[in-house]
Amino acid sequence: MICLGMMCFFNTVTFAIQDNKLDDILAKIEKNYDATDGLFCRYEQTETISQLTEDIYLEGKLYFRKPHFIMMEMHGDENLNLYVNGEKIWIEDLVLDEVEEIDFQQLGKNNRISKLIPPFFLNTIEEIKKHFEITLTQSEGGKNRLELIPKSESEMNFISLQFDIDRYGRIPWMKVIYDEKNFKEIKFWDWEKAPKISKYFFQYRGDIKRRE
Image (cartoon, rainbow, N blue to C red):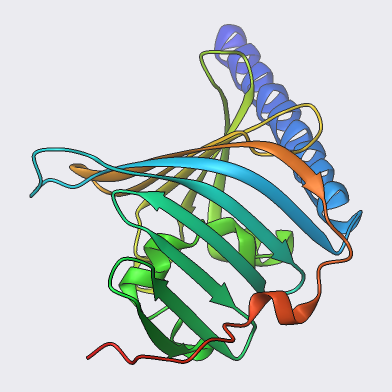
């Protein structure tokens, strides 16, 4: 009975320490997010799709301005520019020379857009806590790793989101798991604060050739 009681005690202490550390990490992410109105980074993405024999590779630049402005340049197996200004979403195909325009309210319902935009960019810490179960682990390199499991699968197009956190509260690596055979990994680097990005930068301004 004493041994069982000691085990229960130490388990309780361990969970309390983990909870405190998780709160500290989330606070660091939020502090980093609150420190500027805009962010810039470079990234590369590899997506594994069960129906394809080879992975899909993309690399490019990502610009973000709070609360919901995003511009992404993507090159590789696809060559796209993506613009999000809070009202509309534009996907510019640089090869086909055409643009798909989508209402912003369709963001969570459009599977293609959901897979193009890294999931965490349009969520605050409070929204993350509300919609996900959060678990703290360690990566092989010793970084803090968070795993987010959607509380309601019907609202998300993935079953698990994992990402590492560096000592500055930035995200260098992310893995989005759609199911056991379909997932993508994203590496981010050259994080910079970019507070002076104009809202017009996130709006497509060319002639729209509508995609049928």
